[in-house]
Length: 82
Image (cartoon, rainbow, N blue to C red; front, side, top):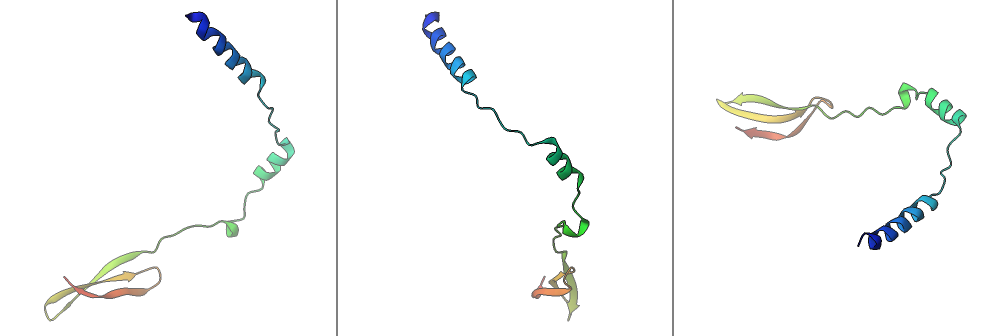
């Protein structure tokens, strides 16, 4: 029983071992020159999300709320009664 599994296993192992393809590596000079040159700060992207919050006001003893975009300094939507 062991011999039935041993032969296919050895064949598979030999095929994997001898069929490997060598990988071409990048030269060290190119890799170090790329890594040593950092990007200028003006070329990097810094993502920021909008700062949005609720504003509240009272009209005729009724409380209202409205979204405000503090990043763009503009209102979002209409006044909503609370």
